[in-house]
Image (tube, rainbow, N blue to C red):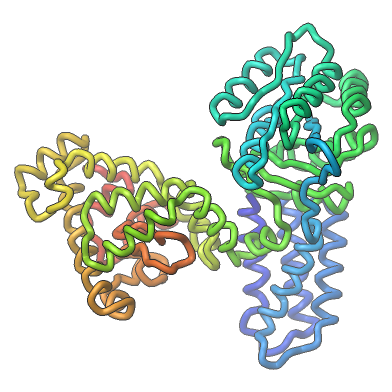
Length: 500
């Protein structure tokens, strides 16, 4: 999401970088670049017009600080304007004075409403330690009730459902009563959608709202529909008191123009964004942090929060102690690699680091390569994993056959692994400085990106990055063909998929 906008705004920023002072001329150049970036990202023309006026007023109104780079002053003004455009501080979910919090989900068919209901329930269960209840009231779409039941069973969340011949408003009302009797903290009403907004749909939703008196109506919208999201929000809000919007399928929306237009044109805030198909891929929308992501500043807070959800910190500390003692083997390598995989797609995870998102724009990061490396390690015996020096040519051939890979790929993996063993040993003996001295700075110019980022205790994420994981090998330049110097060519080619 926002990939094209982020790249274009970086271009606007570059037009200011290097200037000694901010003048009306170079500010005008930057402003025109920002306007063009917004329009190309499918931002509503009125929003784009008002936004550039806001940026211009902020830049021209800024007191020139001699010690601060003009480019940094410009980007700060754009960041503050973006934060305001996205809604300032997020209002979050409504609060119930007594009884369960009742949330009514509405939206058009195909927007991912039922899946979002389950995602939101899981988010409330994991993040807020709530006991949610899902109410299956989408009785128009075939199998919608069964879909919600299946999702609820997978996630360990109770689903209240009745027959499809019942009245949806009554099902919702009885669902809320069930929640009160069984001490549920939150009730999520999954209502029916239509292919388009019609009077029948709105009347049914109004009846549900009247009978259940929800604390908030959340509108689920497909971000891939562009400016139609704004139209849908306006139409629904005419008939229902929309509290906020949940944007789905944002992982497939490179432009993100709808997200930038919703708040300004409708007055409704974006509360959550769906970032993938998995049940845990729902993020709370935070305007300041999202503005930072758009401008390439990363989102370290979001990355740490994600790490805290999926990583066992106690286990990570134990592993870190073993690393410092030089006890680094293939078992440890595999464990650390799988820990990183839990965070999500590699490109998405690295994109949350400051300055890395823009660098990865045209880079091909293929997470499937993880599985092939995993297959090679799993083809080793327990003894071989603990003592890689035992793996002679005959054993390597067996590992290659067992994992379905070329012998050269096994050679490359073992060679790189031994290099990382030496680095781990240095870190244990001489600390971080000696380790950094032996790292290959190839790849994206960040220390250790070519030779691997070891899991260092006390880092931003519990357990750090997986030791020995060659980031450079997972990427292939603009077209997946650029090689970084200093890496074993066998594994490097293998990770890019160029199997000979």
